[in-house]
Length: 317
Image (tube, rainbow, N blue to C red; front, side, top):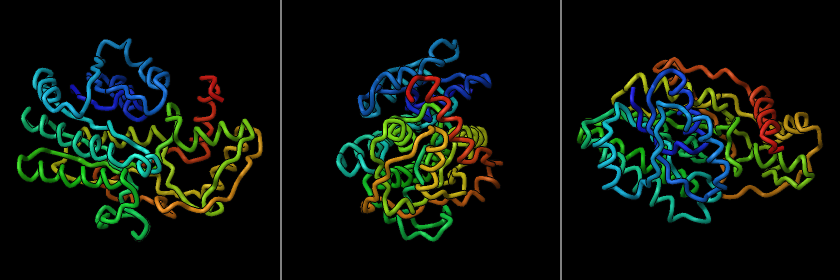
């Protein structure tokens, strides 16, 4: 299978690319290499991809609709894996405009290029934060998800709805995957596991919202990649599917596990919960199990052990 994969230099996109290459697929990686975080980390993500003969990297931007259409027309991929996005809930509160430009308009540009190509199967990465704060737990895909708490999840929900219109009007086969709190080796430096690990080692204060009682459905990168590939192979017409671990963990417990692994006590500062933060994220993964054979295999304790080991190997901790 020839896969056009956006966000190939990112955390999840690079690990998905690696898994696809390992099983014999051809990957065309597309990324604008922006400066949201240091380029050295993106170069690390790409380091085990660029030497492979079945990987081709293209530096490009989702904002350029004509470039996308021309690129897809020339390369004729069998599938589009769309992971490129502006991420991070709290950053979106400070910089809302870019989320509409990248996550909404950029996705429409990609979908439009795909439908002119002849409707390759499209798998789009979304987020469990679309459910907001009032959705009954565990979060089911049938929930309205119409009260996002920040521009980031709002932009992803808009992307989902636009994707449905492309499926409805032009029969573009599309699967939306809502990721829940992804972590693991090659994670981003702005994400909590990375930041908290380094803060604990340095003795820097860690702000825990609401006394650390907020719960997150931490999902290991390998499980996310396995679910994504299952959706890619399935080629569904239009579905929204949760990919999580379905075992929410209190942030305080998460930090306590990191303390054990790093070998130092955290300097915890109790901080009021921002309006952008839900009290819990909790994926109902029944649909993923039924439709994709998805089954998360790595719990938080094991996943964090692997993550900390990787951080040390890379001299990041």
